[in-house]
Length: 397
Image (cartoon, rainbow, N blue to C red):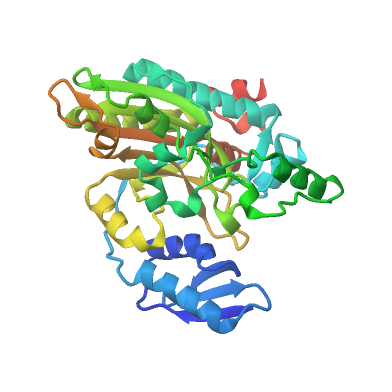
């Protein structure tokens, strides 16, 4: 079933992208939403058999929260890099990677790597880790995949991004219930949970961002002036419903982070230096992209206020990498690296301070490794001769 829902006002391209991105959360029966009529309406794809009146109410509530209070902020591009490789962008990249056995589709939003794609992922991440250590004197750390729910709550995640959370739980510690679960699944063709109360209240989530563990580890500590730098790579999960596809949107993703904790002016300077360092790597890898202002995918009721504050304060920039065009041939880009300032939020949340007793500022560079893999193969194709010297040997050698 398809519905047309008028928007309370015409939306810009930026807002249209956000509305489409979160539209799948409007109701369980909503499969996809498209902004149409030059930003004046939504085309909503729903399950057959869904109540039209119920769908209109649900989508209307979503639209009012998302669009009704939105205040536009003019974004700007900080820098751009145009490829020296003038070959055409590859198409059907994810399918080709799977056909060659270099990417292994292992579940909804879950992939494995082998061959040159694995070598590329490792080479990129090794370079990012080395850059953090040599340019920013970062201490390397390693974190667990799970994060306690109370820690994620202190990070404000359930309030800002509930739609992205992946919970980790277990069956209740009850012999009778466990026998019932065993019996229900012994002859079942798929996993069966006889009753919802057989699943324990989650004590942990799969971490949605690598840097949260860093702030948790610094809780209650006094740091040397002007601050400390860290780097880590981790497996993160962000549930994105019907948006998950190929390497564009994964449920489980690989995230490298550069993390800065310290005095405001020092953290701000480190972020600027991080953008310079990334520009150098982009040039060496010959990746077509732009660095521009951005905001996080806040949940709809908070989007208008939070995104306006974030954009106005210049707290987030992102690197958007050119990838293969869509089915109609229209150009596409994906955000694959963000440069973030959190002001004193995490310093206050985890009681991290400087010797002067003032809360620290924090900043981070979040790098989505999987999207860089997609962009490299989109832009340089599958012939080794087209690849830049800085990557060719590591990937195809």
